[in-house]
Length: 189
Length: 233
Ligand code: SF4
Image 1 (cartoon, helix red, strand yellow):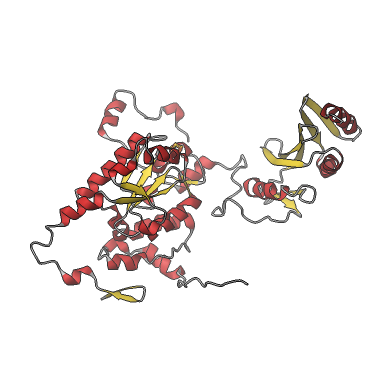
Image 2 (cartoon, chains in turn orange, red):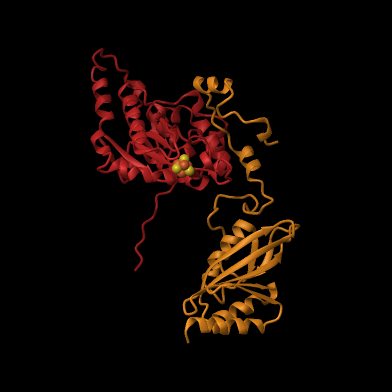
């Protein structure tokens, strides 16, 4: 079976599943939008039956206006030579400490690593993922910093000081209207 | 007699230099010191990429008498090349405190001066000399090897003229530096180096060596224990 054949076959197969939207972007790229409850089943199918054996990343997008997180699972197939990205949306659970979703560690082992990262950066707890301790931000106690409602600039202004640097030559330039003075419309309140 | 750990040491003030000829060699010593320096490069950020050309045959740092060294205990210069995240800063401080005096810190890159292009980042420390006494800053994003060498020559001339004394500041104003460190790492921050003991040893205790932050340290301090070596069979 050559790889084009696999792709045609995959498209036909995916159309059979309910609540799924398949968009073929090009010969080698497929986007699948799927309901959060059927995502693990889809991945199971992709890995077991359709040669998508490599989960290369899980990315997360924060949509605060929709009160949702979008999770994107990027799966590669070496036989079909194509990348499939499975998109799903889960509720953001802003009132609670973290959002929740299921781990796909049992399907793809590398997922444990990505899930730990997402838990730290976005605060999504993956049920049954094996390692959920701190990972990169071991010195961090604040809210998950990649969430869009975390104001990094305010945090920085609160936590750190700035070096003063205003030598004479710079003052002269500033007096003439140049330099690095902040224009009134750029001042952040 | 003061103590360093539990070893009694003779503080320098107890044997005052009264001989008028005692300082005759000071200039010579400073000259020699400035021409034999070993550098520990702590490559934290992207600025590190300018070091290989500065060190190797293109710009050849060795002609200035500066060589890379692999361990902090035998290095004189700590080169911090670029942004320091809060996590890295801990390691930089541990490294710095292990170095023997006199020791010098050079901050390369705008990121060490004032946060650089990461000024908005929650994860990077902004002003390096709030946490460590910096001798020379080399600004630029990133500074070219010429600038790095300029900075090193500046440091050399500072040492030669007896002005490279930032390391003394760490002992004299330890409370200030410790306070800033505690602000980032929490009150139970402790390093395995007895800085106050060293300050006594070098006879550099000042009024600002002690303060509320060193008292906080004392409260949380856990006694240091030697690492136990075990062989697993
Ligand atoms: S100043 Fe520029 S080159 Fe240097 S560490 Fe910062 S971003 Fe990188």
